[in-house]
Amino acid sequence: MNWFTKKKIQHNERETLENYLQRSNDYTKVHYINQATNCRFCFSFISTLIDESILQENVLPYLLEKPFEKIEEVKKLIPLADVQVSNDESLIEQKLFNGYVFLTLDSDPGHFAFLAAQKEIVRSITQPEVEFSVIGPKEAFVESLEQNVNLIRKRLPVKELISEELTLGTLSKTKISVMYLDGIADPDNIQEVMKRLKDVEFDAITDSSYIVQLISDNKNSPFPQLLDTERPDRVTAILAEGKIAIFVDGSPHVLITPTTLVEFFGSFEDYFLNWMISSFFRLIRLFAVAFSILITPIYVATLSYHYELIPKDLMNTLVTSRREIPLPPILEALFLELTIELLREAGARLPTKVGQTIGIVGGIVIGTASVEAGLTSNVLLIIVALAALASFTTPVYKMGNAIRLLRFPFLFFAELWGLLGIVFCFCLLMAHLIRLTSLNRPFLEPIYPPRMTDLKDSIIRLPFSKQSLRPQTLRTQNPVRFTPRKKVKKGDIDE
Image (cartoon, rainbow, N blue to C red; front, side):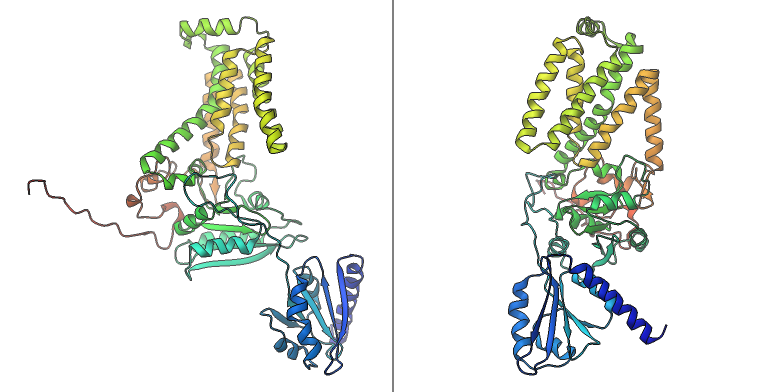
């Protein structure tokens, strides 16, 4: 392809782009004449994407009054940090829709310039809504990528903090930023994250949740394999551990990888409390998750197959509560479980005040009416309500959804084979978790494979003085967080 043919193709592409843009009301093209040299120049831009005050105050006064004839001279006149001169017409569409002003000169038709004048429309930083904590910082991420990166750089003002940016989405052109600490994060992890992101083929990436589904190790697992958070302090802590953070422009949630199962049951507020208190809270959450999954299936299995396991005093209560119930235990349990799920979904989709009313009033009215109508027993109603309450203790919303889903397979296996069915379903669940990975790292670590040194901050949290090493599963370049001080032997009171 010779030079003339190439220029002709570029000119046709430019005309096609111009025809598309002129169909939009927010496309603006204006012509001006320089007073000193009578040089004609033209601005083209998308008015909804640029800050026109930048154009009026920092560009036009200089181009109208000071002499110039070439694009390179314009670059020296304008007091803007980002002025790019080019002759590549394939960049015009990208720059226009990224908030640049396209500048052309009649006296220099072979070159043109892009002037940065982006309009920043962002909401102010607010308190975390999903991961709210009583103690600790009250800042949460917003939808602006630059502002979110700024929140991290304020907390980690070191040159080792690297931010690599790329663009995903054939239509959305969404900016993605991958942040890590050089010299700490494992290069294999960094390379794997970048490879997976570059291999993504999708038309529109509108939120970080798309990235979770596109780069997860097992896309058919109900368990999230990347941890998402809205707290800058949490991202700062995981970067210091040697993990990788993925920022998506337009999303107020940042992704953390690699991660493990136990991290989804730990609230970041645990680190602001005494280690004994936070360990106690973690154990309560783990117990609540097990209770939420198993209590209703155990009720169904016991009443269907294992009457002999029920104490006599409790048997009288159960017989009395189920005397008028025409449904078998499995249908009774499914009715209440589905009712709870309907109330949850209704409360989540309605406005806040209306949703709270639906959740409270609906639960009381439907629960009372179902017992009085003889459709469910009052004992099962209490059990299902406690199971629903226990499921709310999960700090991460996406893991809470997985817990809600798990109850139903356990219910069906309990109906089929009783307690043996529950054990069989539990074995299937453990086999899945053992095979599951996050960025090719074991998802069940440090339980499997067992790593005693990593147990210090998993099911329980030991004091910070005991956490001098970074997690082994991350294989960091620098495993030492700090050098522990040697304990000084204290003398007796009489010495």
